[in-house]
Image (spheres, rainbow, N blue to C red):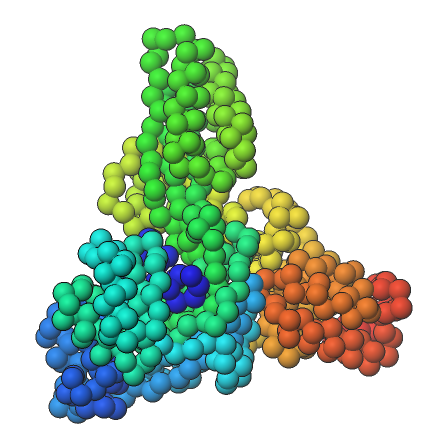
Length: 547
């Protein structure tokens, strides 16, 4: 299962549709309006309008809203004129993507889509650059708990469907686009409950995403596109294994009496709560038994949810030496238990955790509780220990995926983008003094500062930007994953496969980097020695002047 069907399954699992119902309604109204304008207001005589109306009903849109949208499209009410635009390109991990938009402002939509591509290190393509990889089909989803597979298969064959696929919660019936409503009507006549009756694009071949990092990048990219009000549909050809769909983190607030924990799920740019609670010990028992209680209860949580990473609040040094010692013992047991389970552990000071959640290093407990609820979009009431633990988990997730820094220089704060590979190598922490080489990129829709470890990396960033189809984020990703020395060596030998391993770079883009970089470097008056793959500051100076 890949692309359209896979993403639909992910969204159902994560409740993304329910969380953004207002956005879904906006998209449906646009589709109904355009369909009525193009094919008339008679639902049964207009296949596109009928599909849109069925979509609206599946989302429980009020009938008055549907009727009003049809009237707007038919010219019976005052209406905004929408234009259809289709964008094509390559997403993270070399996945192909097609974005269908409905907009009343072409320039706004183009800038918004381009910003998302640049932010995720992806590249927009020309018309038909990836469309040939997809087939247009009708699709009907049928809940698995309403009918047996054999019965549905028999009805679907009789109705003239092309294929049936079994998913986790649904069966998916595929049809030729022209036969979609004929098959849906036949199934309805047989008492089959249908949902999500629509026409979509489906990949001929899937791109398998094997890494968790790549999976998270793909999901975040698609979510950002679908969050845009002008984007109606996103079609892609990724395939992600079930093991990579679940990315769980645990935050822990150690305590000898009460240890708080919170298990969080991160999907792209959304953090959601899986569970949270406290481990309470009996203060009347000796310390050894209390530590054993913490160990056993924490092992139970780990066994049930299997988190991959843990964020632990660092020890708070109390004035009371005995309290500090006991707290340190509890923390030690927690760290050992996590390590024994193979969970990667990162520690954060209370100040770092408060900055990550509240944005204020001296925030009160009540402020943390309030911000945790807001970040997770939940009405759950957290105890102080639970809230601190969940905040530690949020801090962990932000530290893994957040690639922007606020750097204070001369009393002024600058937001600087660093690639994730650079962040990991530099091991930057809040309050540290750092040295960065910065470059500013000015575009129609944004002005952004990019940071580098060395001046050499900055120079090659500029060179990569001169390659057609390579934006700033993708250039940063190439430098972070490949490194300057390997870039030079790969250009020298024509080894474009090195660049194919970079998220967001496909075969064609990799070949383009090698061909165009070699040509550009050879045109420079003081070229880098491509015969040896070496460079020096002396021969980079004239290159920087010419870029």
